Image (spheres, rainbow, N blue to C red):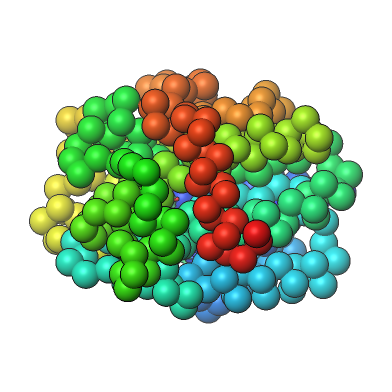
Length: 315
Ligand code: NDP
């Protein structure tokens, strides 16, 4: 049978390019888990995906109710779940004030980390039950949350601190909107959320890899300077960022190439190792990358996991 893969945020950028790459092989049915149903349908058509290779299902990661509803709908569809890709994200580098999810949680950490945390926890059983030979749970990471790299050292740097803000629910009322308890900073909130993504992947690996055989992985797909992720940035930045990445840092990858990379992490028989953060070198060959000290801190990973469980109502 075809493999069955859920990709969140498959309506644009990396998610769409990955959906396309997988659908084209004819070996995958892609469930595009998207907040905007029409946009996702149009996106699938625009890249030439044929109807029998995908299904669009509604998922708004900015609402924990929506996450639960998506999981129920998926279970009712009767499809198996072989691979889950947590890809959707928002980035608000110029926001002066925080915005919030339906549950009153700061938006970037709410969507990028907590929505995905609940989603993957609720779908773990479905993955366990699948008879697919290589089951994988992939959480897209980033270099920007990784302070052992040049890009990860551009201020404001990611830093979870003692997580007092996260423990308080990031609500801006009786707690800070930032994980470390500091003042709101949209760019930092994104980087912090990506650290949480990478810590969560490793904690999944430690808790569930042996028991379930599921491969847990994260990746940095390269700098895809043209995606919608930068839509909220100032116009001058959006103009200069792609050529800067192409010619100066040489970290630029096209959406198509990044989609092929993530599709490899989904399906390549050689990328089955669990607990790994994949990156690609200049010749587009994959390698196991090192994570920064904070992004590989075992006790922080446990703490993020335990606090997140409480915030999403699992504990
Ligand atoms: P895009 O903005 O193009 O795609 C983000 C996707 O997430 C969109 O489909 C968007 O939906 C979706 N999304 C946003 N909020 C929600 C929500 N509340 N519920 C459901 N879906 C939502 O960005 P990219 O493709 O660049 O980003 C994809 C991933 O790649 C992210 O995890 C990002 O951190 C990572 N990444 C990107 C890099 C880059 O250089 N671009 C570098 C490293 C990592 P909609 O279409 O409706 O807006």
